[in-house]
Length: 139
Image (cartoon, rainbow, N blue to C red):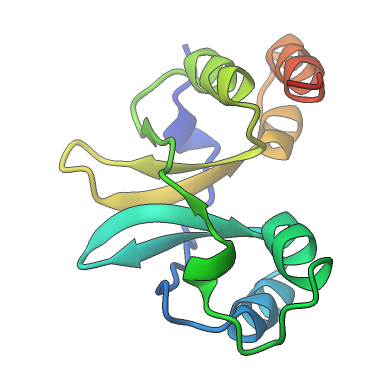
């Protein structure tokens, strides 16, 4: 059984809820990723995605200095690095999310797994296909 730590990206950047959406968007552009966990007082309190910025900020006319906390998704779903790929894909499907933070047993952030990682890295392409189908379903 393949573990999610074998697929995840370990190059994880986090942001503060007081950062601006412009700062976050620039980091996403430079790092070629679309989601960042939001940390406050050494705890993950939510996430901000390129979609959050587009839908909750740009589409509503907010300016570039808008704080992350105003447009982020509060609360966060995460998985453990030793969880199986199938279990994490199922969790992502249940919560309709395409990117998930991965933590170690001390609940410290150690990586991010994206839906595309399953398709690229895992031999079990069926897992990725099923997860994509379920995530893509309207809620």
